[in-house]
Length: 142
Image (tube, rainbow, N blue to C red; front, side):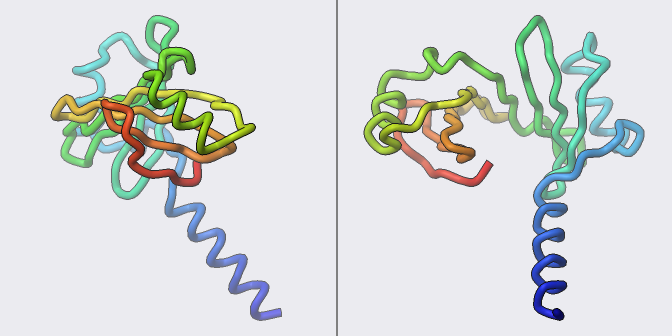
C-alpha cells in the first residue's frame, strides 16, 4: 500500500513540475509587461509555468503562437504552429524513415532570442526536434 502512495506522489509531482497552468494575475509584472510590449493586441493568452519560465499561448491573426519568457521579462523563444507540409523536406523524409507508419500530427517553427530556428514535429505524442537544416536533435515526451 505504501508503494502505491509513493508511486502516485512521485507521478503527481512530476506532472506538476513539468507545466503548471496559471492565472494571468499570478504571472509576474515583468513577464506580463514584456509580453504586452511584444504583443499589444493580445488579451486572451493562456499562461503556464514550466521549469521556472512562463509560457503564454495565444492566437494572433489566425496563427497559433506561444512565447517563452523568463522571470526577468526576457523573451527566450517564440513558437508558431505551421502546416505539416511546411516542414523542410529533409525533416519529412527523416520522420517517414524513422517513424514508419506514424503520422506527424502537428508541426512548429521555434525561433530563440538569438534568431536560431528549430523545428518540432509531434509524432505519437512525442516532440521530435530538428535544427534549421533539418538535422535531428532529440525527441521528448509531449
